[in-house]
Structure formats: structure tokens, C-alpha cells
Length: 95
Image 1 (cartoon, one colour):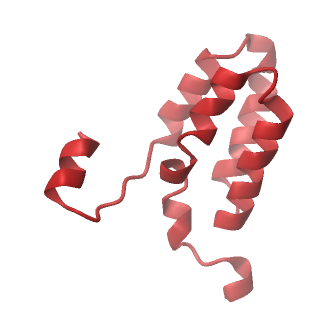
Image 2 (spheres, rainbow, N blue to C red; image 1 turned 135 degrees about the vertical axis):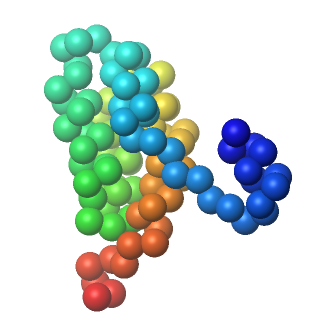
């Protein structure tokens, strides 16, 4: 669908759904890792601005990337479209 939108409306940006992304990440993890993964994802999508969200993505990659590379890649590889909304929120320092 997004390919068609990008071709039909150039410059259009997409925002990926965190609900579905979270389900995909959790499906790639053992149940024992779910609480910490949920907490890490909340840090990302509840970040106060894009800078804090990007720091939270990097922290997730550093903390879990070696042990769960496939699950972490689901966030890191899509970070740009997962954080699209955050690009339009002003940072706290600019208010």
C-alpha cells in the first residue's frame, strides 16, 4: 500500500503502527524478555521528542542487539518510519 501512496503522492511520509510493530517484536522474543522489551519500546514511543526517541532506539540496540538481533532489527530498521510523527513535535528546548 505504501509503495502505491509514495508513487501516487510524491513526498508523502508514512508512520508505522506501534501496536503492530510491538506485536511483531514480541513474537521474535522469548516470553521472559517481554517485560523489558515492552519497557524499552515504551521509552521510544513515549519519548518527549525525536532526539530522546532516537537515544532510546540506540539504547535498545546496545542493550538487546547482541542477544536478540532479529527482534531489535524490527525496531532499528524501521526507526525512521516509526518515529515519523516525532519529527513534527517541537523539542522541549525549542518551546
